[in-house]
Structure formats: C-alpha cells, structure tokens
Image (cartoon, rainbow, N blue to C red; front, side, top):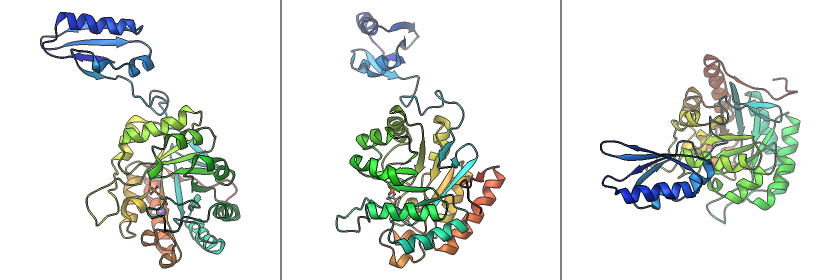
Length: 345
Ligand code: PEP
Ligand code: MN
C-alpha cells in the first residue's frame, strides 16, 4: 500500500500518519520527493486494507498494491484455472458451449432443444427453472418440476446441466439437480447467495451484473472462492447501455480485461448481451476471438411459443451454423469444445 500525502502537508501531519500506521502494527517507509511525499506501508494485507488511512489529515490518496480479490487474482494462481463441470473442462484451451432455452417449459420441448444442441456439439444444457423476471406477472419458471425435467433430459443426452438459483434457501435444492449453479446478473451482488453457493463444491456460473465493473465481478467471485469453492466460471452478458436497438452493451473488452487480472475462466453470453438473433453469432465469435473460454446462448425450436426471452432465441439451424463457426475459430486458436465424458458426438 502506498500513501500519497497532500502537497503542503505539515511535519506534524506526516508524524501523525506514521504514528497511526505504526499503531496498526504496520511498518512505514517515508520517501520525500521534490513535490510530494509518499509513505510505503508494509504489513498484514487485511489490516492495511481495512484501515481508513484516507481519513487521516494530510493524506491525499491511498493506493493498494495487491488486488482485494486475492483468491481470484493471478497473484494467487498464475496459470488459468480449468473448471470441471461433470466431466466437461472449461478454461485453459477447453471451451464451454452452453445452450438451451431461457426457461424450462416442458419435457418434450426440452428434449427437442437438447437434441439440436447436442447435434451442434454443445457440451452443456441450460434452462431456467426459477426465472428472475422484471414483472411479477410474467412466467416465473416451473420450479422443482423444471429442475427434474432439466436433469432427466441432460442425462438422456449426456449433457451436464446449468440452471439459475435465485434464493439462498434453494441452493441445496437446485444443487441436487444441477451440475453448475448459475448466479444471474441481477444477483451478482447478492452476497448471502454468493456465500451460500460458495459453501457447496458445485461449479458456479457467475454472470456480470448489468451495472457492475469487471472488478466488481471479480469481488463477487471472491465471495464464492473465499467460502472454499474454487469452481467459478465468469460470464460477460452485457452491461446497461444507452441504445435501445440492443438489449445491453456487449462488453467484449471485459474478456481480455479479466484475463489480465484473474485465472478464472470467462465465457460470453451474446444472447442477453444483444437480445437479437441477428447480432448473436457475430458477438459469440468476437468473444471467442477475444479469448473467452466459451459461449452461452439461448436456443429454442419455436421461439414464438417461448415462455421467456423468445425474441432472442436462436433457431436450430442458426445454432448449428454458429457452432460450426465457433469450432473454426477455436481451431485457429488451438482450442476445442470439450465433450462430456461418455458422449459420442
Ligand atoms: C438467463 O440466463 O436466462 C438470465 C436471466 O440471464 P441474466 O442473469 O444474464 O439476465
Ligand atoms: Mn434468458
């Protein structure tokens, strides 16, 4: 930690800053420049971080040297983490291709969609059983019935399943059915929920909040990691923009930005990022080209009958074409869509 003192700071103020630092059990190294005086602080990282040093008179700025997301940071783990989702590897050259409807709607519909995505080489099946809807009058999901359908269809097609958990009280229930727990954008900073999924050892797909910075996303990942669950996959799903022509603003730079800070895999979700099928393939490919560890897209066999997010669902043929294109870009980058154990496709 480096403390930069104000210009014109008095000798008495400098002495006071050093005194406060030493009272905390830390060591202060004073360095006087021509224009500014700085104090380097060495000691227990947590004490330094929690001390309100900026409040001491004469202090202009306090600059931390280490990131606060220490477990998520490259300092903790310089190599990319590879997360195993029921036999599917994500990270370090292995790509996730997660696809499925926004919501689980029925057993038959889920089977039709799973067949298509399996044919396209997807390695995980998604579908929400608990849906975070803006309106309380919109379809809220099938609940446990939806979880059962997702599990059965995932097993039938040898695809690990991903589904959202919105409520800390339901983590245990959802974890009984899911191979990966999704934390939605609206819950990225639901710290009780993050701690609860951190208490399981299930992989967690953590979506970026729509007004959250990359560092906020990493701090939320830290909540999960700090509870002992190392299996976190980040997801860029677009942030609030100003242009009504796109649902959100796809922040593709977040992908390489995360890579400079963290070992955790990050995938992209161009479905929620753009909200428009005609924009989704290009953004999916841009994400992979930018270094993403996978793609998450919504697919439906009959979008006009979908109970949620039908307007952004890819049709089967659109998904199949996109999957083939992803494979081409992946091979250029020496990456591959890892296949679930026991699958033949
Ligand atoms: C979803 O995946 O269907 C979803 C609701 O995503 P997000 O939390 O990114 O809006
Ligand atoms: Mn959706």
